[in-house]
Amino acid sequence: MERFASPLRLLVPPSWLAFGIVFLLGFRIALNVVRNRVRGLKPRLVELNGSEPDHSPGPEAGALMKADIDALAVRVAALPARYRDAVVLRHVQELSYEEAADALGQPVGTVKSNVHRGLKLLRGEEDDHADD
Image (cartoon, rainbow, N blue to C red):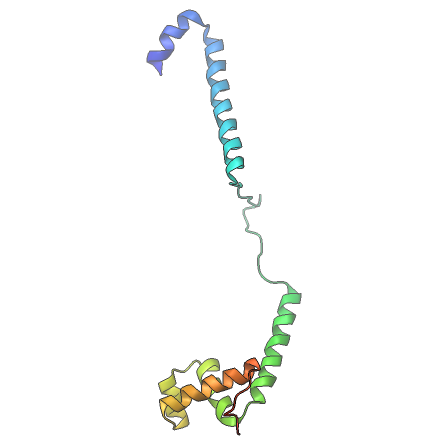
């Protein structure tokens, strides 16, 4: 920078040279800000106190979720026993099919089909094999 500024000192007084450099840097920053806005990059807003905004669901969302869970629990309780047991062991207690088969004393394929049919009934789809 010094190499280029020395010939300019002969033509331009030092106060004007400093002003020109600051002006050019400010212009370059402003140009980059405009380019970023045109590209669609939005600056991230940060809270002044350093804390992040709370994105957790509010009380209404919590109440709606609880109502959905309660309705699902009623529908699970209304399932036939063999489907209910298989669905609860697999999806509520999160056991593997093998563990659920051991707990129920059934083959793994039977547990898989009972879970599938139970979920089908929970979704409201008709099932020809729902005889319990």
